[in-house]
Amino acid sequence: MNSQKTQSTQIGQYIREVVMKEQPETVERLIMLVQQKYSLPAQEIMGIGCHAGLRFKEHQARSLDLKHYVASTKARWYWFTIALCMLNATVILILPQIDALVYIRYLLGSVLVFWIPGYCVVKSLFPGKELEKLELVALSLGTSSVLVPLMTLILQYTPWGIKTAPVTIVLLIQALAFSTLALFREHQELSKR
Image (cartoon, rainbow, N blue to C red; front, side, top):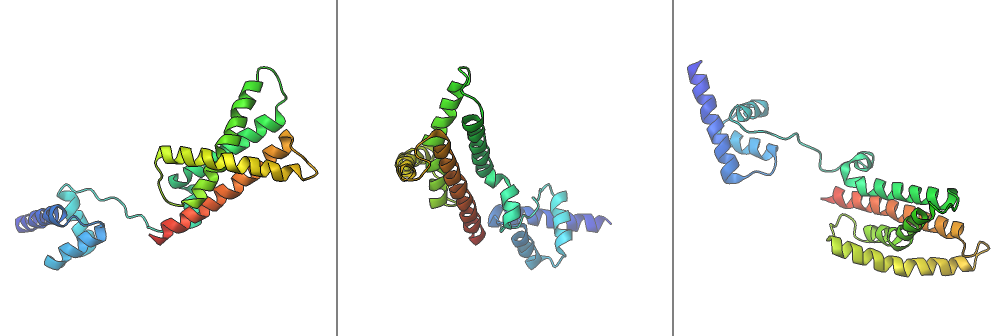
């Protein structure tokens, strides 16, 4: 019994040394390195490592399927964008023009015109790439300043013309389409890694 404790202590020290020297990226790699010296099952090595004071994170699969990716925290930007679009649609199209609410309409309308279209296009052009905040703001504002006049120009030649409801609907459709495209492209990009 005492010799087992001594051997477990030695293996635990060896595991700590391997972690400090080799710095394995995964638990599987650590187990493989320890098994080169001690031929023990993976569960036993992990148990000894836990007793030696190491904490193992659960291994998470690198490639998430799309369903899990959409529900993960990495897709939080997508759900925030969709919620903001729905809030815009509700406030701009449904709420009447009451004096107290007109400033909320102006604020949300400005976000819809100046931010959301460009943000969605930028996210779809640079999938999986973490842009700096200043780059993201500049690219989003610049892209929106090009897209919105172009879409309203095209809308001018349709039977609906340039009115609040058609412009809002076109901007929302564009935002939903490009944010969904960005979500798919980001998932594909992360699956390749």
